[in-house]
Image 1 (cartoon, one colour):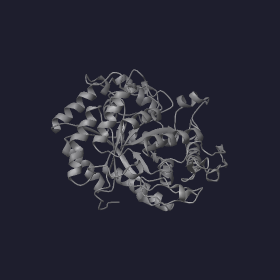
Image 2 (cartoon, one colour):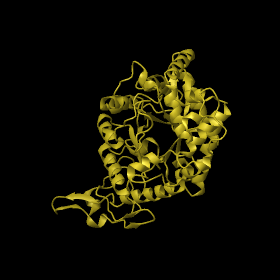
Image 3 (spheres, helix red, strand yellow):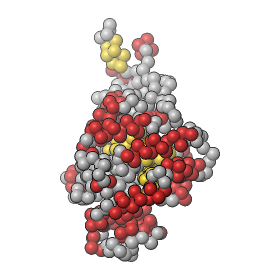
Image 4 (tube, one colour):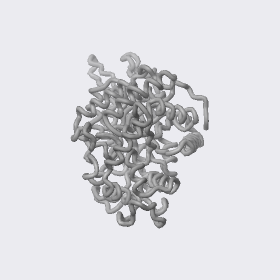
Length: 461
């Protein structure tokens, strides 16, 4: 789906993870030991990303301790709480948090994201995930993960309920008429009276409609169910492809699915993940990449890989290729697309387990690229111009240095090429992504320009 791009439409998101995405980043002398729970560390990262005029920053999350806590910093602050603090430390950048539809309820989550959108002045985004894994299920009184397809059915209804709740207040409901003693027009606040397969929710929400109408809706699954879900609901998609050809195919597939159900395909922004390791020279970048790989503890990494592949660690030989008799994707109930990506990478490049661990150490299957700032910019431009991406999910291997070098060296090159903004021109996250404010489905719409959501008292009357 190659195209001549609008040179102003490249989007960049900073995916922040404690000391960086490389699992050994915490072992570098520069890495702050308590980064995963240090609010000042995250404020610094947010300000760096905003200095680069990035569209947004993103925090991943899971309702379970992920992996072996001996392997890397594993504890995480709750992301909407953290983003509320970051909203006060920034003015422009969008703030996206992961929240699971498997282990939340729509009312509480809709309220949380509406609150974040109000606190941030219209900069909130929700990365919608369907959590897999028996360990997460057991934290919520279940014996095992619900089936893959069932999780996506629940997720679809969850989003429908959430958007109804955000629509339960008309934009003009609050008039704050002190003379008449009327704060909000009761007829402009409605119950949603939802009764479905998974949820019964009366409503209305106890927070008025968010400044953006809805927070930006983001999705990250690349299975068949995941792509169908993205085509129906997502406005931005975080994805992982290793090759340009795979990126083009995924991009075309999701856009065509959206178009087939009547959506404008330009209303979904595809952002593959890239883990840039940047040096003054290519040799310097490769040396840093090798230093990080050498710091991986193989036994930790082997146990993590075995968990992903649903096999015993003893079945993996560090100096041999993956065994032939591992489960197929159809036998995997969680993280299907990531499972397939890892297995295909190992088979295609004939990697030993040790080599595979090294390739996965930087970005868990996302594309790692070591080179100069110019080479990173060239890669981004190539994928963008080839129709493989609307932008990128930037995943620095080491933080804060990896984000600083991307902002200070790569972003100026993209700006000089006319690929990226030099100043913020919108006040909301939707505005950064060039997306409209959604109409209220429960009330008549009121036309507003981007960033202006209130109407006068006379109009309200």
